[in-house]
Image (cartoon, rainbow, N blue to C red; front, side, top):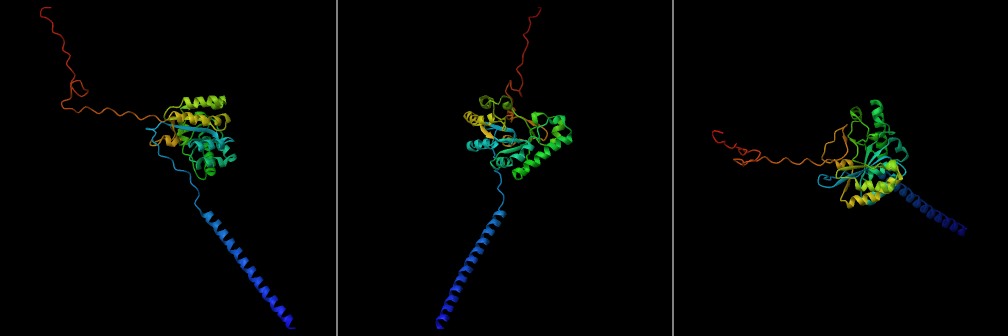
Length: 294
């Protein structure tokens, strides 16, 4: 009887210890879940990552050039972004709205890596042949698509397809219209060697180079183009960086940054002004006297 009672007491003690162990484990698991949930909540509340700020670059002093890419995003855009990141180069992408849904992450990557994004219409029509309402739809749909994909970045510049614009189109768009000073015609030839040669040889300070990131030969040319232009002393900038300090007018077209006008010569202030100066008396031009009687 005593043995039975002892066994019962031992069994009760073991159950109690086991129960405490399970309770401690349960409490630990509960605390872990709380910590995990708290971490997730803090992550959800963390501010969203923002794109890098536009740089302040003096393109009146430096030899600047803007690389621009039209008609993307496409299957080669991420490869191009890899090259630009490796080389430390920023560029400008003029985006077709209907292409955004297929490559939204490329658009997001463009802005997060410091590149500029511009509007290039929804499906690349000739805007001069369209009504103002149709032009506005082309622009607004593209603006909305880019803003969603980029995480809130809304383009402030536009490139009209084919470079075709007029006063009515410009007023309807309501943004500065960015053309180009170097047309590589990469879409026509689809030739990497030619794209490389034109891309290195033709740019001048303040220029804007036109490529297309939807063509593989064009993208393959960019490493050599960057190397060649660096050797020529160029600094790579986005379009907005290129025009830093200049006021761009909505509806107006821009194809390059023109050098500043030279300062007018200071007026002569000597008193009295030296003979022959713009502000002084001119030398007298006396006529020779004739002998009397002739």
